Length: 290
Image 1 (tube, one colour):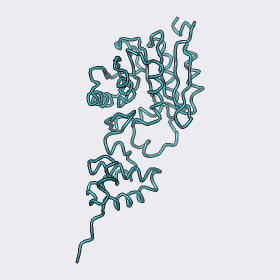
Image 2 (tube, helix red, strand yellow):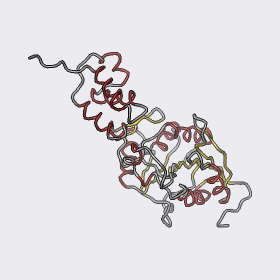
Image 3 (cartoon, rainbow, N blue to C red):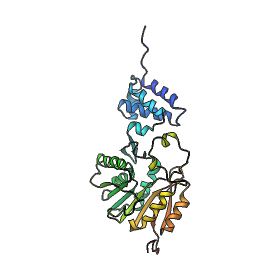
Image 4 (cartoon, rainbow, N blue to C red):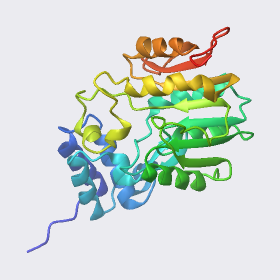
């Protein structure tokens, strides 16, 4: 009896796409990315050189993990952001394309920035993307998670930015957390937790990404209430803070900033949704500690 022929790469991708179709709206893309990972090639190379090759045995295991809602970025161990490759683990949020709006706004606001602070650095994606574009700048990334800090340090080294980026453990909820940072800063970047505690999330996010980097109380505003009022003391006189927000939170976070003596400018992402608030010190405002 003749053994059945092994699936080709093309056949395995089609079968995986069908399997994943009920679990994700990016089934075909996920299958292609996982096949490229199993083969150790770029996705573009699949179509040029490998579609008729035998499918590698490792592919089935990767697809099974995705079928259990594990994010593709965690399965692969890396994610591209602002044209740079970032190592990611379940200790950090996966960098998303929408957050590139923050990087673009930061670069436009202060292309001359010398000192940058990233609050809640995670993988280091925001800080390292900015430093990569501003060769004159140095930066500090802080995170309350030591495993996240380790990932950020590794990414800084891998991208050749280790000499200009210092990653340290710090928590803006703790008294005196910023005392050793050596401010003020020309740019402050922040993507704090902003998801409501009971928000309905896809299992890919809720069951796999770090809850401490996602959830911020019943209205998703807890971390803004703590961090935003501290920004004036961290900013240089002409400094700018770029803070990512949920798409329904622009008015509420703007009000927090205005109450702390900041002016706010809203930036929308490519989908036209509110995404980033650009804060500056408001002229003539003495600040909460004046």
